[in-house]
Each structure stands twice: as C-alpha cells, then as structure tokens.
Image (cartoon, rainbow, N blue to C red):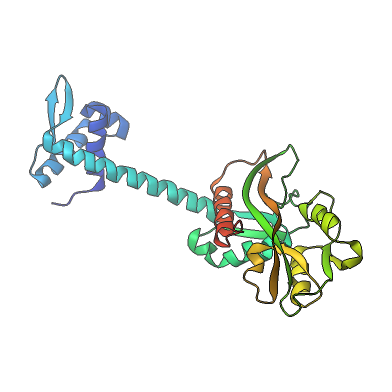
Length: 281
C-alpha cells in the first residue's frame, strides 16, 4: 500500500492536538479524511497507532515509537524548508563589502574560489578603500584595521593582525626603510615608526601595506609587515619579533535589517580570516 507524506502529517497533528476534530481544523480537512488517513497508515504498518483515553487520542506503545521518529523527520523537513528559503533569499541579493586593499588582496580575494560552493547563490562586491573611509553609503559591511568610532555602526572585533619587521631576503642587512604616509586615524605603525626609526632612514613612504610589501620584495628597504603575509613570501626575511598589532573590526550600519545574505556574508568573512591564520604570530 502506498503511503503519502500527507498521512504522516495527519498522524503528527492528531498526536499534537489529541483529537481528530482539532487536527482536521488545523489542517483544513474534514474528520472523515483524518480518519481515513490514520486507517491507511495503520493498515500499512499492521499496528494500532492511537487509542482513546479520557476523550483524547493518545499513541499506543507502537504509535509512540512511530510518532517520535516521525517528529524527528518533521523537524528535519522544517529545517530544510528554512534553509531553502534562506538560499532563495541569498540568491536574490549582492552584498557589498569594503576593506583596505591589504585585506581585499590577501584575505577576501583568495577566498572567492570557495564562495559559491560554501554559499550557493551568494554574490559579493569587494570595494578596496583606504583606511578611514571604508563604510560608505554604498557598502553593506566593512573590515577596518582599527576600531571604528562612528556611533551609527555595529562593530565586532574579528581578528588581531600582528606585525614583524621584514627585510628583503636578498638584502637582509639593509638599513633603508619603507614607511606609510600619514593617515587620519592614529595607527600603531605610526607610533612605532616615530619611536624606533629615524625619518632620515625612511627612503620611501607609500599609502598601503600592499605597496610596502612589493617595495620590500624588490629590495627597496625594510618595513613592518603583517606576519600572515611575511611568512608565506619567500622574498622577505623577518628581522624582529612582533612589534605591534592591528585589531581587525567588522562593521555594519546599526540600521541594517537582519537578512540571510548579510548573515552569510559575515560568516564568509569570518571563514576567510580564519583560513589565512591572520592572528597567528
């Protein structure tokens, strides 16, 4: 005998409500249909599923085992429906993420290959922005290299990025330095360079860490660089222990409505940061 999912739903509703009348009302059916579906399942299983007790229908011992397993299946089906709805919602939305060029090039961009496999349908726009001007009106969330002070943001610290001093592998004893141009917000790099490096030894200053990395690999001079990049770049050589660290903060507007695409994008960012071992010193 062929058993349909409708029969299982009927048994669950009778178990939840205790009467055929209430189950019929909940399912929008008549009592005759409820009775017919239960009888069909009982005949297929060759067991009695319910018995009357005090005006209610309660499961028999065999029915109790059956219904408990059925309830687990029903929970799984409900979870699958929720996941499908979330996937459909994600498929309709592109999340715009702003970050510094360093984090775009060395953290987020390398994680794009697994994006569609991990979150089918999720699309992202990556906007490289200078530090201090990340969360513009056209972006949904941003990664900052220091804690944002804007009261209109919801912020969460997601990683710590330690720095060591690296020299060109071909010139490990060079005395020239590559520095950063001044930024609006105070940075650990600025304070450390002012305390430890004479301005006369700084041969060039650049706007971004990505450019500093290229300069060191080309032999221009030494510079503090993120450890997670330095340890995988053969053209640079560490010449110090950790000298300072940047805190990485994820920020989004306080009025952002919670939605599956934005939640999925935040999980993807967390996974990308974890994959590069950003906080390892």
